[in-house]
Image (tube, rainbow, N blue to C red):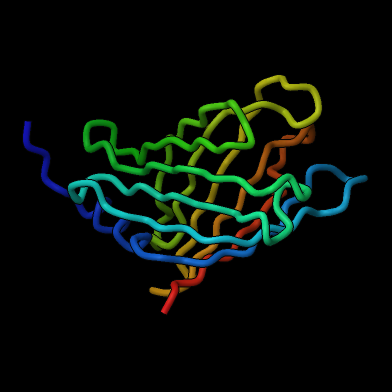
Length: 164
């Protein structure tokens, strides 16, 4: 089998490079927001996949001062299903997040649907990660979950800036 990159794979190539990030995450209404900063290196695997390796070092406020964390995100596009697919793992959790998503009509925002543990009781609930391209050198990643009111509630936003 010899797959050829599609236009969706080319869209993913916008993520390739070396970035710094700053993020803010709210783990609950009565908890202060957690701030983090770090680096991410995104590379291509055969023009079909992107592999993003993130790191939040101990020198900045990460995971409530727990000494930092590392993460790996994979993203690709499956022409058979016409959907973006991928995974996310990180050293601060044991859950393997699996993604299934699509681009908006303007091709600026990739919405990745997934299921993961509820922060309060561990039950499985719906989440979305949204990657928005603002320019060649700036993108955001937002995470949200669906509330009991049936509405999406954003709890994390990270700002990625290309290293020059």
